[in-house]
Image (cartoon, rainbow, N blue to C red; front, side):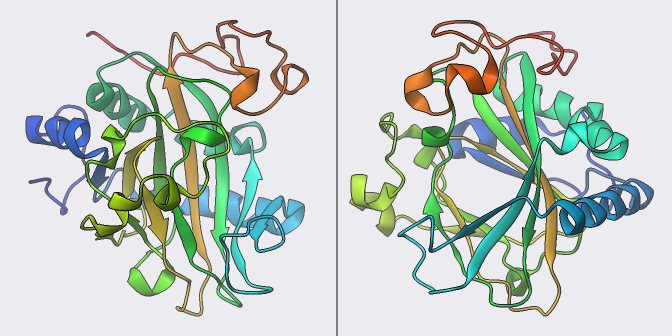
Length: 265
């Protein structure tokens, strides 16, 4: 059991938390940032996404979204290049060392995204997995999703299907995971409300979703994708060679994708 009254650090992370992540594909850390760190990151994230807007996930780009005209989420890519505070969060040793501990692998940061679920005309996030979106296959990939505001159920917190990370690899473009694996729709789901400064880690193959934001206040978070240090580029899985500057089979390396931690095996 992780104590929700104090910061979780690599030093006090329970062994059972590592086993839970590896078995179930996700892990809830109630508090990983201080109040001061949250305030600094929230201010930058709010300012940036209001100014730059970024992309929008809605029914115009995703047929799984049923609410006509509603927005699932707004996101701004590569937040770590736009804000020193958000870069510090994406590379925060409290976050990255826990990430390496629970995956059991040395990791690189791939990129971070400011994620906003609006309070007006909000749609639920459909059940999905992240793997088909990324330009690689195999290896270890995970996301740290850090809440920058309180995210109760009514604000559209995430739910996970424990153990769904063990499904066979889907193919590129397999977005509707319940159609591909209908048996998963009958598995129990765990809903994880978060306080500001709390986070969840999830494997790229675990099925997850979120409710609509009915709270009257925007949901704001930073999601950072970490990849196995030995990850190789696969253009068939998304993106193009021009997007990242790698050829098929190249290691994804360089200053833009730094090693994150203190992995000791």
